[in-house]
Image 1 (cartoon, rainbow, N blue to C red):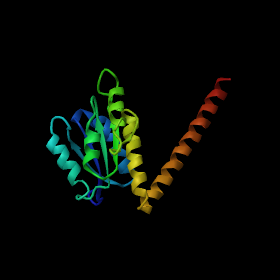
Image 2: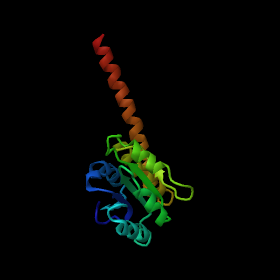
Image 3: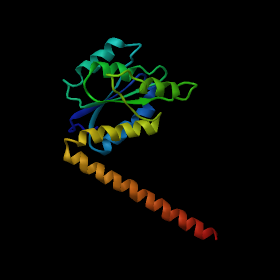
Length: 173
């Protein structure tokens, strides 16, 4: 994160072992020029720290929080219960269930405690960064423009892959 960027998004996780996955959210936020902070906060091992983080996030200028958690995956729900900011959950593939337990724990919030839940693992973290950018783009034209450019990049990438595949097929004939 560049020093000049205002910190708008929190990227938190239940353990430092989740960082290789959650780094993908940071990569996307950087792509859109969005300042973010990274913290390890556990709903189970440091509940007071989790509560303080959630309760002070808006006052500190955050506009959204991306939360990665594995196993019982209570962190996103705890954070969502304690803030009015958008909370985006990323289930971690951290147990023998390959993240299905985390997915179900994150997506099954009771009415009144909303968590936008992404896919398990790195694709989910990538999408969480994009989703946070989409939320911020509602009031930031620069981020909105970068999102349009990103969609064009995705489209160009598909066209390039199609052309390359056609060439490879033609060469084999």
